[in-house]
Length: 214
Image 1 (tube, one colour):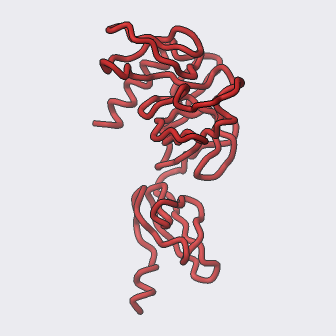
Image 2 (image 1 turned 90 degrees about the horizontal axis):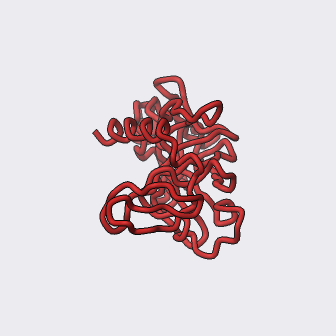
Image 3 (image 1 turned 90 degrees about the vertical axis):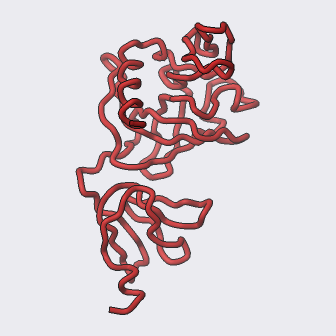
């Protein structure tokens, strides 16, 4: 077997693992493009497969694949706020009706973005008046491919969990544009989900975050 053949032989991979440079292979199912580094990475744990004729790399998942679905509601972490988009790492899916509830964790690492036009019904001049890195947000998924297009325009969507920028305490819901720190009284602007005050959803998120960072 040649060195090139060994390089592109099927192998087990984990989420985030580099599979190929984008000049060599296009991303297939179970992968995503890391544009910053110009490479295709695995988005799920599984077996990497290289189609040398079509020049597509894909990953067959080891477990049933749970991915964001168009129209579904997802929980994610705001990782970066830019002038034109809010970047979100998606964790898992939630159910909004008949009552908010955590459903399941996604099979791998999925990324998404909330364009300025999809943040709120009102005119958005500065996205950092609505979201900040570290916020946990409830978003609506608009498409079926990673990185995902997201929206928080509708009332159920927005921040559900955020920390005070002064003392680090968890902010309380005041209204859909305001959160307040119960410890120091500091008030901060956000695009707040109307479900941010849901004790059921907050408890589910707390349990998940504890297990995620353990």
